[in-house]
Length: 208
Image (tube, rainbow, N blue to C red; front, side, top):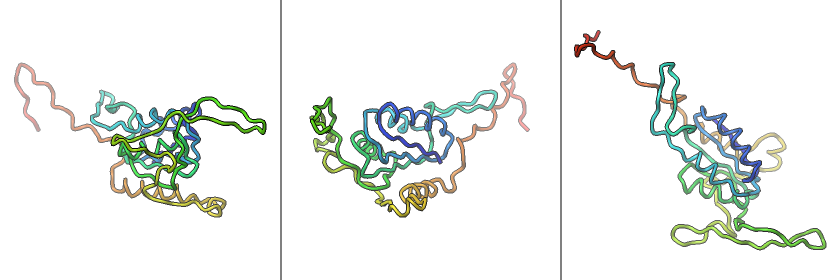
């Protein structure tokens, strides 16, 4: 299975997604790690790639297979989130589930999605910002803000486990994906048998 971690939804997060996602298109499943994501604005880009659905394939004379659409990871997906998944890091898991891409594993996200622009610096080094936007649903209900996104499978990482090298949230996601792909053939569907030779002079040669 593939694994992609995005630390934010800005330039660095976009670079992380491009470098990791496209190198793992041959995997049977994908874990998207949105934990400790500081937010930004590129979640739609990543989600557009994750939403691609395999509808057909092509093969050339050298048996190279191409997918339609291109650059699609054909398999189940899961996303990790925690209480430090913030702003666009809140929106990513919310839309990941809304698009039906897979389950969410971890703890409830931070719950602050309103965009801000600029800040007023304070004498003590702090600053004040004014929120400028908010998310709402197609049935005209406020979403995510002041609550966050609830996981489908709640798993709390304990500090002692992390220090011992055990990430319960990640291990749960791996187990979930292993069960999802159990018994499935690896790789893309193979091409069908070769077509018979074209008939000459309208006469179809006898088949063995």
